[in-house]
Amino acid sequence: MGIFSNILAKLGFGEGDKQASAEAAPTPQPAPGAAAPAGPTAISTVDVMARMESLAAANPEKLNWKVSIVDLLKLLGLDSSLAARKELAGELGCPPEKMGDSAQMNMWLHKAVLQKLAANGGNIPADLL
Image (tube, rainbow, N blue to C red; front, side, top):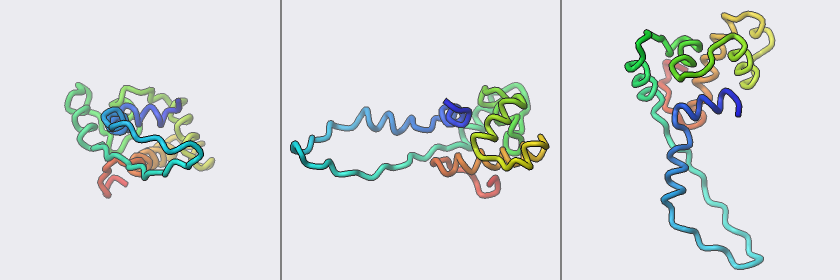
């Protein structure tokens, strides 16, 4: 499992899907030889802001997760080392010219993580994107 998958898991992405599928009634099976109809897959919305603010309120450190990828990772209890951030940047497709400068990489990475969270159903305010 990659670092971004860990971020998703820590924020509860997919929990609603698991709960909904566990509560769903069994679906009727199609007749032998018939193709099963493909149903739409809904993306459940995760209130990223509320979860992060709740974690921040409970954390004794004052972490500025809204602008710092290091603080965001710390708040989620994940490895925030340079090596871990470089691995995450590689996962998310950080441009090579930014990988050589940790400050540029960190700024790119923070924005990319928030954009990916939004793309996966997280409600991220426009001012953070």
